[in-house]
Structures are given as C-alpha cells and as structure tokens.
Image (tube, rainbow, N blue to C red; front, side):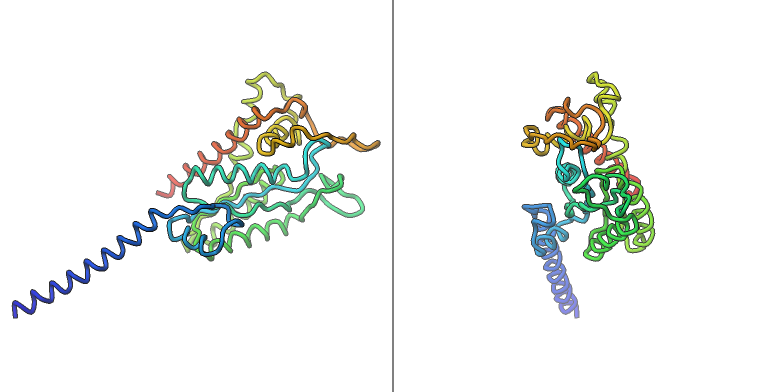
Length: 277
C-alpha cells in the first residue's frame, strides 16, 4: 500500500513537473518574443497574435486629419506627425502596438456654404457622429481580439471632444470585460509647447495657431523634405489659411516640440496605469 502511494506521488509529481516545465517554456518564449514591427498595418495577423500572446495588450489609435494647412504645409500634416509620435510612444511603452492613423475627421460642414477647413480645396470632413462611430468600431475591434488597454491620441484640436466622449462611453461598456479605454488630452492640450517657444523668445503672435510655428516645425522634423518645399502663391481672393509665423519654423524646434508631445502622453499613460494597480 505504501509503495502504491509512493508511486502515485511520483507519478503526480512527475506530471506536475512536466506541466510546470511546459508553462515555464512558453512563458520564457513569450518573454523573449519581440515583434519586429509594432505598426499594425505593417504586420501579418500571426505576428499580431504572437505580440498579444507576448503581452502586447495595449493599442494606440492615432487620429490626424486631411485639411488645408496654408500654402506651405501639406494636407496630411497631422497624419505624418501623429504616425511618428504614436510609434515613439509605443516604443517607449514596450508593450503597445499602433493602429493605422484615422485620416478622415471632422473638418467643417460641406455643401453650398462650407465651414471650417472645408472652405479650402483638398480638405476631407466627416460629420462628428460618423467620426464617433468610427472610433467606437475601432475600439470594439481591438477589444474583440484581446487588447485590454486602448488609447486614443488626436493630433488635431477638432478631434479632442469626440474622442473624449467615445472613450468615456465605450470604457463604461467594456469595463466588465477588463478593457480600459482612455483619451489622452495631455498629448495635445497640456504638452508645454507654447511655454517652451516663449522661453525661446517667440511671442504669441509669432507662435500663432493653425499651421503656424508649431505645426510647421513638427512637419519639418518628421518629413525633412518639406522644409525645402516651394509654395505656390495664394490665389487672389483666398485667405492664406494659417496663423502666426511659419517662416520661423525649423527642424530643431520641431524635434523639441515632438518630444514634448510624446513625454506628455507617456506621463499621462503612466499615471493612468498607476491608478489601476
């Protein structure tokens, strides 16, 4: 009888050891795995699956816009900037992937009397309710596949309110499943860029707003070829479409401004993670 019990224990311990060894192997394999690419549209689905299994459960949804940016800056300015910053943020986090940039966002009303940026050719606008539906669909898509931290980052002021509303509403719905959804306003609204430029000696009139010193410097940094772009003159009767002094923009300033956005977003993400622990 004692020999039987002893043999049974050996068998149990042997199986337990095999299970623990197997678990340890897969945990070790997951720990070693690092995706070669973290931008979703440049990955295959098995690569995304492997990243999820390895703990890459955070996804960043960047929003930009296709809008006029004066005669000196391309329509996709926000898209190029937020693609760059989102990748930097994901690389710093070490456990995040980056969704394709949402390039169609609210830019004004279209029709017989266009408003906002829709007054200039080339701009593409989505009605705000459709933009919100698009954001929600993207969030729910990622939640379906196992992402449990979904972050919205918007590079344009017109995107912020809708992102905040959608994140709040969908987060409440997905919370029972352990999924958190956050809009990150610090990236756009509280990044310290104006204070930085003022310390360099620029005044508010020089800094301007849309397609001004900040936006143009950022574009020059993420797309250096744009710095040598030859601008066509503004057609007669048209407003230029920008504010401030974009002619004062430089790649060096852009590098610092980009870093301020990245740092602001990361600081907010780390704070949010701390509150969940």
